Length: 128
Image (cartoon, rainbow, N blue to C red; front, side, top):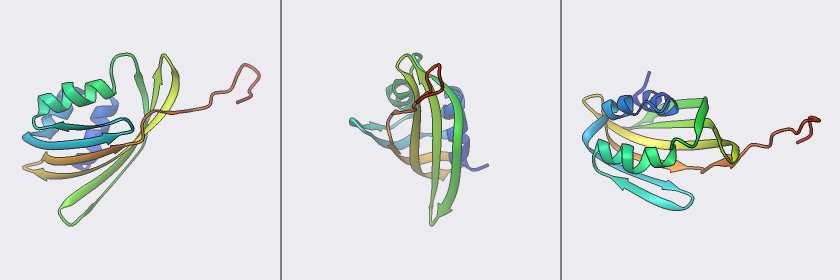
């Protein structure tokens, strides 16, 4: 399993202690979501200042729908898709991340997020 895949799986489970273990103490983290950009320079800031805000307690990550990873040069790319249920309905979220590791920890990471994309759900008669 790649480091990026381990990150996606831990995030899908909201296992923030496992995510923290994957991050270098001096991580260079940046991300872009539909409404803002995010930066953090230590694991605590990544967790509390970014990831816990993206995936707060109001929503449940029901499934890690897809994860794929590959590497090129000195980077790894990981793409993953979550199915999330929130008070507002059912959503898909896809993220693409690029990362570099040092001593098996993520030292540098850039994430691009699709945002919460609604999934059409059928009504009682089966119509979408």
